Image (cartoon, rainbow, N blue to C red; front, side):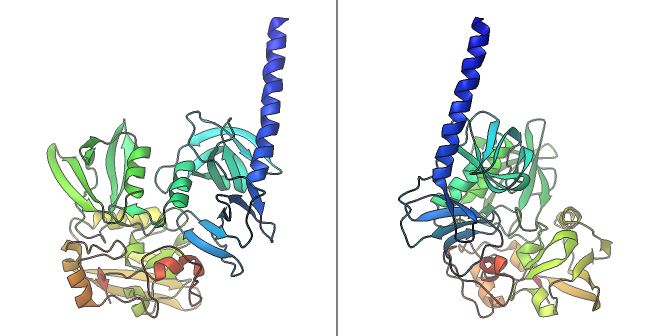
Length: 400
């Protein structure tokens, strides 16, 4: 009898807690005029996930293309609402909840860098992922993926919300962190595939999840000290953190560093106006078919091929693009080795030394980049989703 009463009490308490939790979450939810959900983060601001949310009648004060997050500033105070509380709980149990949905589940995979976290069920986008204490642990992006609380908090609390890159992608094996892929278009990149990362800034690496956040959340121009193990040889290297150009909701092939982004199946989605690709005549909707005669069919294949070019970088790259109406376009670009070996500029939004950059003439077309991620300016001459990146000066690692 006592056991039955205890179970009944626990179930009742859980149900009551869920009801209170839903009431709390609903107070944090602000529906925009279009009925689109946003989540209150201050007395006049709310947060949304929407890669394509570029409506001009909303004052978008801050955006992250990689995460698809935006902050909207409202004309009227949101004093009838409560600010969301963001914290990463220790338990893996989670609930997906909004004003209509309530799903109990758990974390299948944590977010590691720009690889989003996974929930145990499929849910719509902009649904809050919460802990049992009604604390925001993430925000869904649709399907079984969600943005982790730490990435949301970093976005909200930092004026410059750009994410950092050290020119490599990492993976974990048997509790050790190794270099998986290396970006050949990155100034003074010290990494080689297979390097084991022993220490970062004198500290042991810890988990890959925390290691990735240590790099991605780095402030502009931070110099990171690494101790590597390569073929039983200890190597000490330093890297100045640069702007992460791809990953998350954007493609991540390493070609983003030289001004081209892709959609599914390697169809060109965006071309930086100042890039060698733009000068070659490449347009959106062309599909990348091969690099230096090597067929490529996915982002991973492009990244794997380019990573292996880092040690013996060729003098030229030949990219073959194909369009269903216009046929094939062969783009041959020359490698500028002096840019890849030079020191970084001190400008977190450019690549290569400032002296070399001035000599080769960095250009952004008619756009001027002021060095922050604020404002709702949209480059309507190209895909508005990429307007932040289209304003960033590029060093010509490859020239046309």
